[in-house]
Amino acid sequence: MMSNDSMRASARRVQQALAKFGLDLRVQELAESTRTAAEAAASIGCQVGQIAKSLIFMTAETRQPVLVIASGSNRVNEKKIGSLVGEAIRKADADFVREKTGYAIGGVPPVGHAADLITFIDQDLMDYERIWAAAGTPFAVFELKPADLLQITDGKVIDIH
Image (cartoon, rainbow, N blue to C red; front, side, top):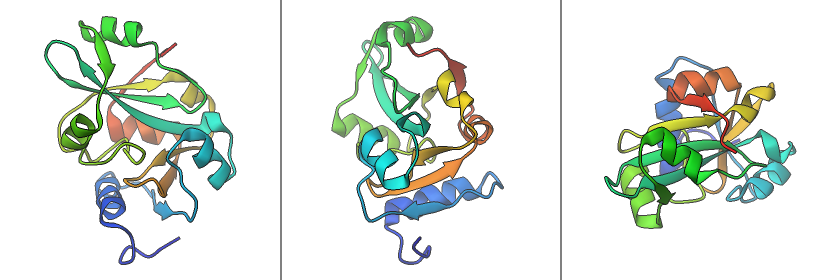
């Protein structure tokens, strides 16, 4: 693990956002990419399902950002999420993701975003004792408990299938 001083700026911003919650959550920068759930699980040495992937969607009409924190082994049912927010959603493009979160695709964390996001959490993540989330870059992650994820995101736990 790198010291806070040697951390990339994006990872340092995530660490600062995490510090505000008073939990002992520490960003780690890894040598291997964690851009995809499979890469992250291989790099960390955990199950793909333990990866909390932060996926950004956009509402079709009002262009509101929607964050779905999904288990790495699951796909998001966009129609179900759309019904929960009251309008269709679609996967956001790279520019929208960066504008609304402050981070590039492949490193979007569940916290520390540039805008307020409607947030949903995959209920399957609640089945694990420990999970891992991206921390601002494709090489940075942090470990946490599912209860910590609820606390730091104020997200709504749902069945995302």
